[in-house]
Length: 281
Image 1: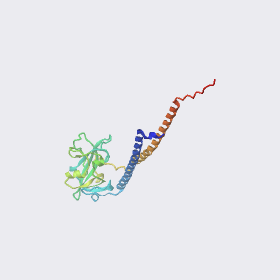
Image 2: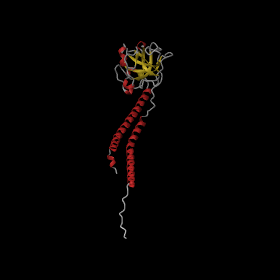
Image 3: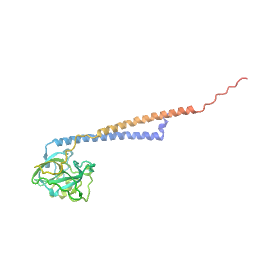
């Protein structure tokens, strides 16, 4: 009755199921690990945002690789803004921090204003002063309200240098003067007379208070959402459990159909005539 399991169709179906089960289980664990990473990342961000600011030069230095534990760490710095070496990061939406796709999702596209802050010790740190809308001419450097002159103290969130792998933003050559795709102290160091601290600051506040029409400050990152990864993990595991269940259902259906076909074949077969019995005369 079960010899049909050795047919090409059923051998292929069985092998496919045996491959799909471990693959789906593996995909479930992959989503679980993404969920755990998201939760741990949210915890790091929440702790960093609540902490009191520390001097930026105590956390980073030129050429440093910022640890993940310092993501969005609250830092402060005192110095003078160097607008002569100010650049803008292209293809940014209001509130976009470069960590997601830079397409804008239908929102207004503009620039992030990146201004070096020269510290008292002669080094400098890049400060992302916020977002401005793009002008009519994308090849021209936009008009930007200058920051406060003289000595200022700024507080902000420490961010590592942007990379294509982390942000999805592809670097490009041949951009207009003083325009960049990625915010990177390594890249900007080539055009700076001062040594740049690694990473950059995402501006939160300035003392003394700046004048009107400043770039729009970038909001704090959302660390409340855990994303859909746990739900995806559960879905993959349910799918893997459904494979053997579906195989058994198909097996029983195939068996029932074959039994029904045999019954019909037996019912339609011509019956043999009974042996004739001679009649006595």
